[in-house]
Amino acid sequence: MEDQRALNLGSEKELKRAIERINLLAKEVIRQRRKTGFLNSNDLLSRFMSIIKDETYLRDIIISFLLAGRDTVASGLTSLFWLLSKHSNVVSAIAQEADRIIGENKELTSFDQMKELHYLQATVYESMRLYPPIQFDSKFCQNDDVLPDGSVLKKGTRVTYHPYAMGRIEEIWGEDCLEFKPERWLKHDGVFSPENPFKYPIFQAGFRVCLGKEMALLEMKTVTLSLIRRFRIELLTPPSPDQHPRFLPGLTATFSDGLPVLVRNIHPQP
Image (tube, rainbow, N blue to C red; front, side, top):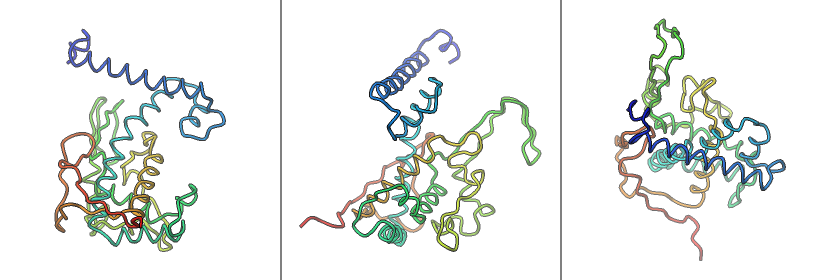
């Protein structure tokens, strides 16, 4: 592989060309937005462009949104609806909260309304605790270091952590760690309360926190809310109580057989 990279041959040559095409796409997106004007726009790209002057950094942000967020959001939504199909009480709680905050049969009209949907936020977090879109991740030590438990790491050491396993550790989450329980994220007054990101590293933590975290959460909540309020979604093959999804090998968690569902309109047209 190193030889192919040095000589620009084979898969390394194809990878280089693919990266060049992606970079050109990102640059074109930025160019077009500058052409149409961005200073008075409120979309996410325009806001980044108004505060970031480093062209390379801006390009990398665009690529992150275009590529990194697509498969992970899809994975998170698939797992979430698999869980909701087994917990109709959670579906009802989300719908009742939406009717109370937004209004029955009314559309979501503001970001402030979304922030008041604490049970929906808790449901999304709880789903990703059990089925994180990225089930394991690795980092490499830039310098020699010592972990809090005293483990000595040399420069270049690969350290892998496993959010999928961490979400199932009783010492971290309690005796009910295997249960899908959105209420664990709510205070007594029903307000969502996040955990330490190092305990819940779904979006990583510290300086490496995911740039698209808030965008991904907003996408997942918006899609979930829209579908729940309009449709009844049932699995074609109802799962047994002790059944768990099977995933394909890969960086992003993907159901091996997809998620075949039957979708029914809750409010059919007369």
